[in-house]
Image (cartoon, rainbow, N blue to C red; front, side, top):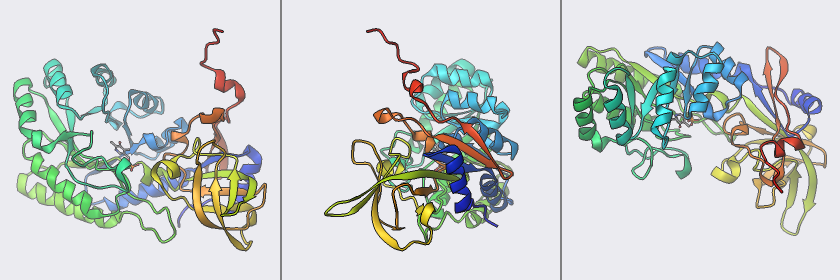
Length: 404
Ligand SMILES: *Cc1c(COP(=O)(O)O)cnc(C)c1O
C-alpha cells in the first residue's frame, strides 16, 4: 500500500509547527527505495541517493539506515554524508567545475570519484597513477529530460567528457596508468522514456570494451515521478528487466559480471514531501481570482524556475465547491505557483498543500526579499519530528558584518 499522509494529519502539523512548513514522510522514501530494489533485483544494482534533492542530515541518516548509498555533487555534501554515517565506500562524488583541490579532498576522504573533465583526468592520473581508482563521467550526446534546464547529456551541455574524446582519454590512461573502475552518464531529470536510458546504456557498453578494469556502469538518474493527475512515472520494472538483459548479454560476451549503479534523487524523495502554506489574501481582479499565500518562489522555486507542475489542495475545505484560481506568492516579482488552477473554494486563512515537494524544494530555498526559511518536519513511525527550526529575524543578519 502506498504511503501517504492524510489531509487532517497535515492540518494538525500546520497547527503545531506553523506555516510555511515542509513535511517529509520517511516511510514513503523507503517504499520508493524498495520499488527500485525490486525492479532491479535481477541486476547487480546499487542506488546512490542524489542528496542535492534533499539534504537535511536526518533524511541522510534515514536513507543510510535503509541501506542506500549517496551521490554527492560537492565536498560539503560528502562531509554531510560522512557525518550521517555513510562509509566512504558508500559515497560517490560527482562534481563539475570544481578545482583540483576539492577533488583531492574527496580522495583524502576515500570516496568514489567521478571525473567529468579531461584536464582533471590528466592531473589526477599524473599525480596518483593507479593508486586510486576513479570513474569517468561521459557525455553520451543524448537529449533527455523534462526541459532544457534539467537536460545534461546533450551536445551543448557542460557535463561529462564527450564520447568522441575517448582516444584522448586512452592516451591519458596509457601514459599515467590511471585505474578506471567505472563509467558514468546522467542525461537529465524527468525522463519518462525507458529508451533514453537504454540508448545511453548501449553507448556505455560500447565504451566499456575500452576499460578492461571496469567494475560498474553508472546510469545516473532522471527517473520521473508523477506530478500531475494522470501522469506516469518512469516504468522502473520494465527498465529493470531491460537493464538485466543487457548486463547478462554483456556478461556472456565478456565473461565479466559488473555492477549497475543509479543515482535517484527525485524518485526517492519527491513524493515523500508536502509543503503547507496559508492563504493570506483572496484578491479578485478584473481578470482572475488570486490566492496570495504566505510563501513564494523563495521557498519553492520549481514552478517559476522549471515551469513545473505541483498538485495543490485546499486542506481546510476539502469538499467545498470548485473555483478557478491563480495561486501566487508574496515575493515582489511575478511569483506564480499555478495559473488557472481548480481548487475547492479558498478562504483567507485556509491551509493549502503542495504535493511532491520533497525534491528540490527546501533545498533550493533562499532568503530573497528578506524572508525567513520554513521549518522542516520528518514523520517517521507515526511521530512528527522537527528537523529544522523555522528561521528568525536574527538569522538574516547572522553572517553580516556591520561596519557602518
Ligand atoms: C541531480 C543529479 C541526480 C539526480 O537527479 P534526479 O532527477 O533528482 O533523480 C543524479 N546524478 C547526478 C550527477 C545529478 O547531478
